[in-house]
Amino acid sequence: MADSTIRVGVIGAGWFASRRHCPDIQKSPGARLTALCRRDPEKLRTMAEHFQAAHTFTDYRELVASGTVDGVVICSPHSLHYEHGRAALEAGLHVLMEKPLTLDAAQARELVELARRRGLALLVAQNPPFWNHCRYLREVIHRGEIGEIEAAEIHWVGNVEAVFGVVPLPASLPGVVPPTLFRHDPTLNGGGYFVDGGSHLVCELVWCTGLQVTEVSALMDHPEWDLCSAVTLRMSNGAMATITSTPTSKIFDKRIHSLYFGTAGTGFLRGMPFEVSIERPRAATVRLTEKELPPAPTPLANWLDCIRGRAQPELSGETAVHIVEVLAASYQAAKSGRKVTWAAGSP
Image (cartoon, rainbow, N blue to C red):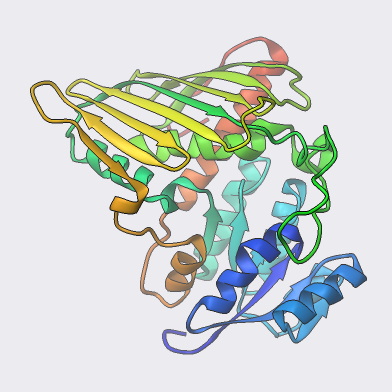
């Protein structure tokens, strides 16, 4: 498939897909959006007409068996990721999965192993591997420029109350179809904010440092369906880390502030807009904005290159599984009031 056109379908062809994945597919050389799937036939028709998709399905099983696609982008609610991903992989289709990979670590491992056995490209669209400021920090850490990581702090502040059904959505939102809310339902979402946006924060920590989490303690405002949370983690080298999220603030432009403390220096991430700073004793501070850094690939571009055999996933399947492990452990710790501990590589 190195030079042939890759036919792509979308399962869960809703508001987010209309803003991100469908336009990206249309703009990608050598890829064609051929099929869309969602349960609402009227909105499905609207999406198909807008993106000129030739095939439409209201049942994902019909799509994966249709022979109209070589791979699928899965944008369905989190609780359906495993079911949809397994069906696609068993049908011999490559999969680009929206985050998180699944809600259960054993199921996540099953999908990664199934993709490996079938020789299929499986990639999870977590943000940090595809943000150039995170990529720069990762390179600095992996080159040893700030020494061994001793501690890290990640703080996220913003407002997602409308997306989570706490307040009404704005009357006008960019996108081909309006959002169909599911994040207000923990049975569909798998929890509240931390399993959703928090997955990116966990990804940043483990992907940038290359370390695994071995212990988790957590406080959440409502562990069954959280908005605000504070999670403390011990890393495989003994380092301590904290992740806090406050998605109910009156700051609406998403503020991220991360600090990585090493034995030889400190790395800072700030946004939005994003920038990265590196401070070391007796050395000039390096400060770069996202516009000054080399562009990063998109998840779709990386996935298509993996299908063509030209690249490896920017986020490995093993790391995607570990993110699910940490998310599940965080909720377990918050619900039980006890820390959750495991050996690195074998939670």
